[in-house]
Structure formats: structure tokens, C-alpha cells
Image 1 (tube, one colour):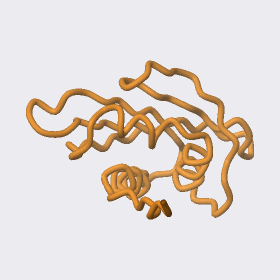
Image 2: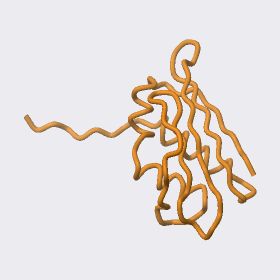
Image 3: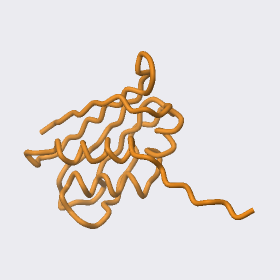
Image 4: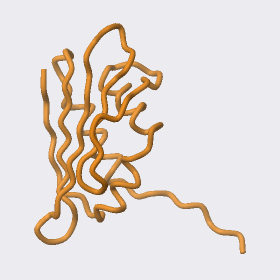
Length: 114
């Protein structure tokens, strides 16, 4: 089953790319998609910096699961983000909305001690 979620986020493509192109984050998002509490090993299948990032689960009970994030200029302020996921689970929308929430959320940066 395939599901898609879209949203315009108030961040630039480089900011979003930096968040998304992180192996630990991809493994956590895949776990959310598959409904498991532990990170799921993934393999990146497509990477076009600041435009497309796709990955699939490498080991999960023989099930096929993949996620793709597309970034595009938002036609004004922000970046249009489209996430497509494929898996046998019937309701993927909640997992995709959580990814969009995380990407769009404020990043907490530690105070520097200079």
C-alpha cells in the first residue's frame, strides 16, 4: 500500500536536507512506518542532494517498506515537502505526518559556552 503526505515547511531545502539525510533519523522514521519501537536498518536507494532522498528497510520480517522524501521550492516562503511511503500496513498517514512534524519543528540548539 502506498501513502503520500505533503506540506510546505518554513525551512530552506539545505536545512531540511541536513535533517533528513541522517541515517539514525531514517532508521527511526522507518521504525515509525513499520510500527516497531526499535530502529530498523535501512539502505539508501536514491539521493539527489536537496531534492530527493529515498530508502528502504533492509531487514524486517521479509516485508517490503520504503520511504521517499521530495523537496521543492514552495513558490514563496518555505519548501514544499512530499513524503511517499510504501508498506503493507493499512494506515501510514500518521507515521508520515510525524515525519513532517519532525522536519518542520524548531531545532533545539545548545548554547555555546564561549
